[in-house]
Length: 464
Image (cartoon, rainbow, N blue to C red; front, side):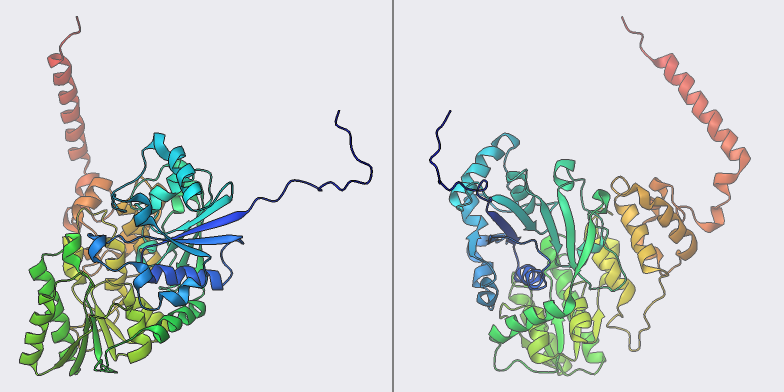
């Protein structure tokens, strides 16, 4: 028995465990979303916050990282430290590498030592959980609760692949911007994850900070029509030639609407020759074209130059222009993309569907917003058709929508072959809808199946 000294003071209990929050970001837009969530008090209290930055470009060595982006220094002050995921896992690429299951304990110990986590209680806030690097980071800390934040329209679609329940059940919340008021995200709903809206006014203040710090060319025109490139050929959705023609179509549409001053913001990874082709077309049309190759957010351009019109294919920036800046917007090329996206489960399908359903086409002079029925019903039908195994509970909603709202306008959002494979309304042309209910055909089908079963038994090889 240990003796005690009279009058000695003993601690009331064990020292509280330090809480560290890891926040993963691969884009400046994502880091801005995290900053807005922090400013709004939406993230759990923590003793220390580490921003883990990842450069997911195809060739990270030749592309500027997040820390080098204009305005990032304004966001850095919200975090205690910034660490590089690329340097941590070098020489592997962030999107193509994850730890082997047997190695995750070793990686957790390595990161705790490398990042000075010690025995800290760790929580993680990350983006795009279903792919790396977010999945890899979540696997390395198997006991850490997860919060997911969404920085685009993809949050309104279903989870793109079936998640391991050991990962999915750790997710507590989905933080997202209210880009489409009234529309509820489907992402991670299979695990009962509830979405929480990052206040738009807080996000707008963060964007204003970035805009103040950004440097734009002196010749960048105010009040011009702004064309946004997305580099869809890199995703295998379009060929480079088709994407060039899409940009030219955007330019022509803006000119037809009366805009003689146009600003083109290409994707940072897009080849320079695309700008030259647009310049040639602008000369032919008698239009002043300025190419903005400065690496800034589209939202910074909105704040500083107040474009008269924003045109893109299905960029999330169309909705930030409309929701947070009150700018007129138009789409281009969405109908072609709805046809081209393969497989049907392609996660870009929901963003393209939302943009096509809600925004006017740049080629229309006075385009009305099309009547697509209930938007939540449309997304439920598209989401179920994309991922019926992940979201089986959405089948009744999909059936109701398809039965009531499947028109020549809305049929573009669905593939007949997909509806047929799922047995959904609209799979069979209305002129032939009597066939599944025809009693004679049903008897013939039953007889054919019975004959097939008998033939199968006769040809079966007996076991020895």
